[in-house]
Image (cartoon, rainbow, N blue to C red):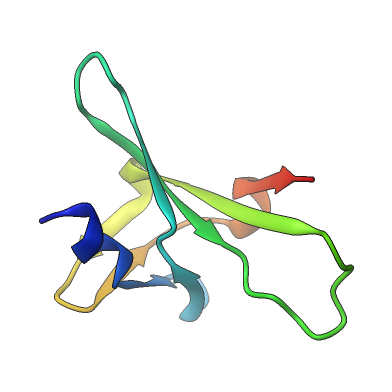
Length: 85
């Protein structure tokens, strides 16, 4: 599987069965080449503050299954928020 294939997949949370978004980037250990996590931008809401970029960092150990078109994760989203200004 390539990074391009991974970016095409939607990420679904098993805890609440809601769509988180699509994979934007990955985090990996450059020494071992091991995949550490997925970075998924938070959905933009109509009433969100302009310029507020929220991203979710989902550890690879929280990935339940990678299917042909979706990635299932089991994660608490409040604990996985990355804030970028």
